Length: 154
Image (cartoon, rainbow, N blue to C red; front, side, top):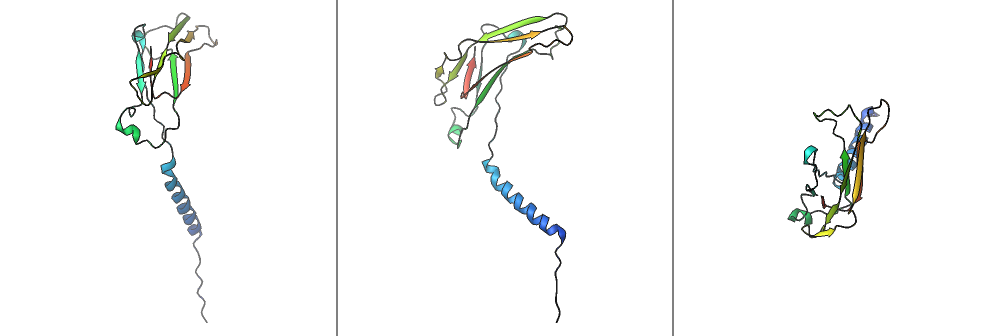
């Protein structure tokens, strides 16, 4: 009587595992959330009393907005910072600079309507620069809030 033994190749087990893991990963890709970033900025001499800017999700108020299955959250970070990439030389003397602004939040269901102009009415951020070697200074200020898919800073 003849017996035929098939010896499994040692990599077969790893191939099966890799295939199984790949299937789980590929089926889970649709469940991964995407992160969208929306940016607007005012720099240099453009920062003055009458200047304002608006940041908005480009899908808000369009038919694409209704195609979104679930909006988890929106986190807004407003920053005020020293621009070290400028061609202006400011490194020879210390300074302090403050910025006071208000934030208008628009209605997510009707983005042409201002929903809230009171909550973030008087936000103040300060940056400092110091020439003393080794001394720390605050080169960036941040203000955070949630829930606005469209807002203006004035």
